[in-house]
Length: 356
Image (cartoon, rainbow, N blue to C red; front, side):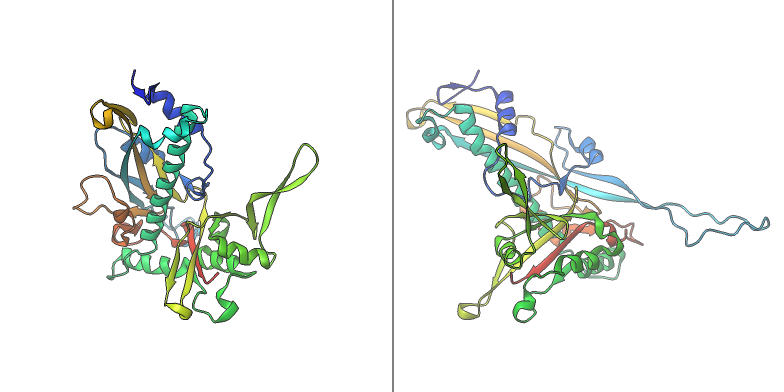
C-alpha cells in the first residue's frame, strides 16, 4: 500500500474522506441546488474509455394550436412532438501536490487524512465553481450572428434573460424592491416559478440588507436562542452570497465603476456531474529529489451542460474541454432542430446587472 508522508494511503478511503469534509470556503454556486445531473448524459459519458462528447435526445412538447371540433364528418388533423438533441461535453481536471504542501498540517496533532482531505476538498469546490462560472459566461455570450433558428433563439434569450439596470443613473442602478420579480418575469413570464435560487456578490447583498429586503433564515438552538443562518431570502427565493460572482470594473480613477452580476437559477439548471476518473487518487514516491518526497495526484472528470442549452463541440476540441472552451459563446446554442428552438421561457437561468 502506498505511503504519503510516511502515512499509509488508501486511495478509495481517501476519496470518501474528501466527500465527507465540509467546505469552509465560499464556493456557494458549486454547492447549490442549481447544480444537477443528467442521467442520460451520465450513462453515455461515464465510461472510462475516453468519452468526451455526447448528444442526448431532448423531447419537445406536443403541439397543436386548438383542439378540433368533432362534427362526425371531419378527418382528424394530427401533429407530433418534436425531438431535439442536446450536447454535453466532458471537462477533465488533474492536480498534484508533494508532501511539503501538507507538512504544516501534521505538526499540531491534526489527523492526517482530515487535514489533507479538507484542503483537497475545498480546492475541488473552487475548481467546480470556476467551471460553473465559465459555463454561465458562455451561455450569456452565445452568438446572435445569422438568421437561423439558433441565432434567433440566442438573441431572444440574451435579451429576455438579462435585466440590466447598471446603466441607470444614481440609485436606479442599484437593486431594489421590485428588481428580482421584474427580472424573472422578463425572463420566463408565467413560468417564473421555475426560479428558486439567487446568488450575488456581497456588495449587492449589503444594499438589500440596508433596504431591509434581504431576510436571513433563522434557527433556534437547544437553549432557545434564535440565530441568523448564512442563507437569505429575497422575494421568496433562496439567496447565497459569494464574492466569487462576476464584478467588472469599467473606467479609471474617480470615474471607475463596478458592474455586479447576480445570477438567478432554477433547480438543476446547470449540469456539472463528477463522473470520476479511472484513477482519481494516486501516490508516487520519488526517493531521489530533495532527499525523497511523496506526491499526491488527483484527477476528476465532469459532465458539463445546461438544461435547455446545448454545447456544440467544435471540431478542434478533441480532448478535455478547457474553461476557455466552456466560456466561449460560439460553443453554446439554445436546443433547436435547425428550424425551431425550444421556448426560452423553459430555461431557468437569468442575470441581473447592477452597480450594487
